Image (cartoon, rainbow, N blue to C red; front, side, top):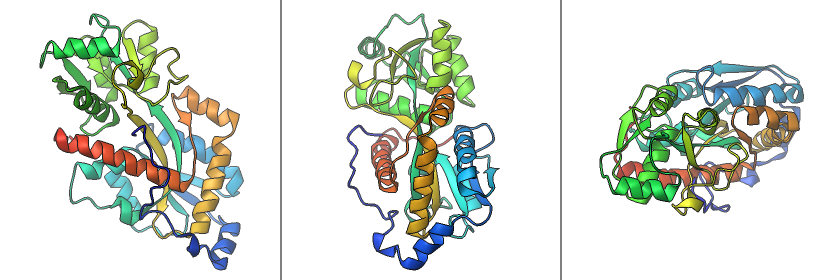
Length: 325
């Protein structure tokens, strides 16, 4: 997400306040009266884990069971499961960045962010951490940029699938710094992380949790985090923006969505309930242990953040011809 986020941007996703009629408000007061289904990524995936923490906290508030429905294969399969969902709040989607960045890389998808989804709340944010193999003679972002520029095309960065958070973080870095560094694709995040730890490649942008584990053991050197501000998830590590590349921000974000057309009063109640859960110290602690910061915020703020990220990443994706692979 860009550091300069507009808090007043109005999207088609945002529901008109005038829609909060008496009937909708009465319906929201009773909501939910039956089981709620939350669709998310594959079991153990980046969206699944925070979704489970959140729904565990929501269950006693709802007074109804919440069923997690895992869908492997990326956001397309999750979107398939949402297509026939009634806009009544009983089927929700919890997903991360790939849901809204994939349409920037592929045409003919079965969903449209503007048409199909109503943002409810951002839930978590986790930065990547810019790491290098310890054999690389650099100890700062400025030194890394200078080192790569002096050796165009000679250094490699590992990456998971095209369009993944770590891939976009690297491509944004290369675009903003004007670097010629070769992407080496791996089957997944773990393989890409092991590749840089093993010296097969020199640079990677892993999510902060597993990345910092290898930094602490000395197998990797951390240069900076990709968030707008320093994070306690990586204590003592500066941001990319403050240490050589002003304006750089790229983070993994996940949040909750409802089908478009869900009554505004139900969206509002869901947002309040999610905020209540995310403010609990034990929930923050559990997410922190997973390498995530609890966020929250209004539906409008979430929608604006998505729009902002799509604008920034859309330019990078077009410029560097990134395709999901």
